[in-house]
Length: 347
Image 1 (cartoon, one colour):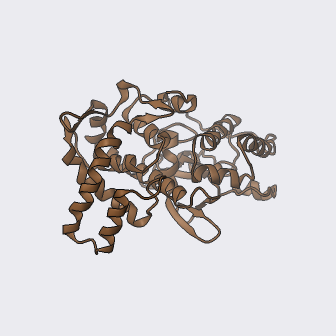
Image 2: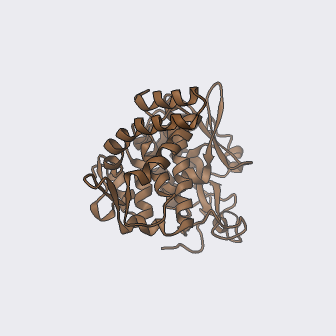
Image 3: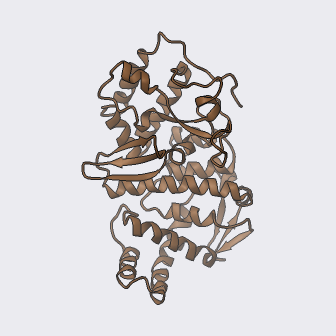
C-alpha cells in the first residue's frame, strides 16, 4: 500500500471490521459497485463460499435501488447497464424485463467488481486481512475467516451496513453534483448531514454513520467502542460533539467559519459528551486538537467528494495549508483555558 495515511489507518486495528472500513473509506472509486457488493455480503450468513448466482440478484437489486434515487453511480457517465436500468424504469419495472437487467449486469460484476474490491491507497489489502478469494474457475468467492467473523454476528453486519450506506450516499451525492462546491451541514434536530448547494438541500445520512468509520467505531476522546444499538442514556451511546464548543465560537464571533461543518464534528460516547465528568462546552486538550487536525487533513488530501469540499468551504480555506492555518488560529483563542480530558482512556 503506497499511501502512508491510508496504511496507518488500515493497521491501526488488525481486525476484519477495520479492513472493511479501510476498503469503503479509501478505495479508489469509479463506480459504486463496491458498496453494492458489501451490502449484498452483509445480508448473508457465514459460509465457505458464495457462487456468482448467490451474489448476483442481491447486488443488482441494491445497485438499482440506489440508481432510482440517484443515477450518479458512475464517474464515467452512462453505460450498457445504466441504459438497461433506464429501459426497465421506462417500462414500468415489470418482472419479465428484470432478466434483461440481470443479463446486462453480470459481465460487469464478474469482470470488475470482485478483483478490485480489495484495492486501496495505491495498492491492495495485505493477504492476511483479505475478506474473500476470487475463484474464477469455480465461479465463486471463497470466504475467509476474516469475513465470516463478521457475518456470524447479525448486529455487526447491521452496523457495517449502516456505515456502508452512509458512505455510499456521500460518494453518490458528490458525483451527482459533479464535485461542485457543496457544504455538509449538521442538523442538530434530526442528527443528519445535509448537502447544501445554491438550489437544494439533500439529506445524506446520519452524522454518526458518516463519521464513525473514520474513528474505528470508537469514541474520539476516551477510545471506548460505541454502539449505535444502545439507548441514548447508556454510557457507550454515540453522540455527535462539536469539538470547538458553539458557545465559544459565538463568544469570539469567529467568521467566516461554519461551526456546524464536518470539520468541527466528532463522535463521542455519551459519558464523554454529557456524562458526569463529560466535556459539555469545555474545550478539549491539545492532543485532541492535533487528532482532529490530522483527520481533517486526511479528508482534504485523500478524498474528492463532499467531505473535502465541506471542510474547505466551512473554514474558508483553499488547500491543506489553509486548513492548518485556520484551525491553528482558532485553537490559539482557547490556549488560556485548561483543556478537558476524559478520566479514563481505553486501550
